Image 1 (cartoon, rainbow, N blue to C red):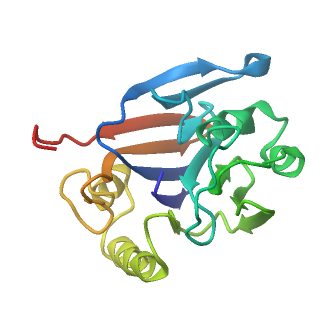
Image 2 (image 1 turned 90 degrees about the vertical axis):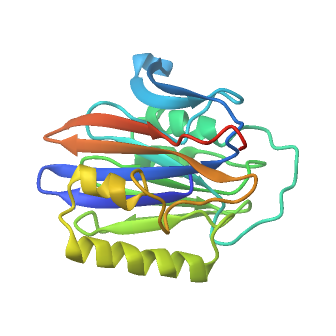
Image 3 (image 1 turned 30 degrees about the vertical axis):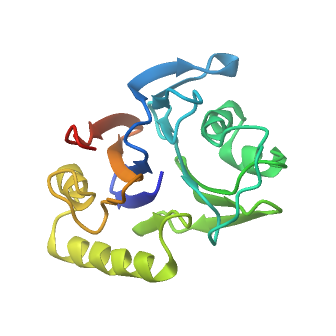
Length: 223
């Protein structure tokens, strides 16, 4: 939920997400989930709340959520809904634009939601009081970091690393997994006492079809 990259490709895109969470929090491997209206998505599932941080419809749509808005916030529990449910709700709407405009996020903890379809790259930021909508250039690469775990300085450092990596490496799916620290820890991998990068999920869209790759981090028994 905490470091997300978007790379445009000639016939689609690659979106890769690192989830930073307690390594003790259980997650179910990616599976197909049936939503309202018969809509089907593929997503890893959080065992505690039943939501997800990333999902794809098998075609061109992908939704990915990060904790926090523009700045680190103070939690005001209880909230009425888990943010992981919002990802599924985005697919149930007629369009991502419709979801953004029609949804009410009152008493939902702040989040940043990246939404990609065949025409748009949208970012919805909910700061706890109002919605902010960003329509980004889907022909360019982008990087996001969760404001709850990374300050501006840390994000800028990752952004420089990201840009340097893309300049010196081909943006293949395998290289992007390496960028996100699947093979070895780097700036994209969080390693704090109680919060760590526990998995990396990648959605590859090509010619209107999507494939989801999921890699869990393996921790020693001491952790």
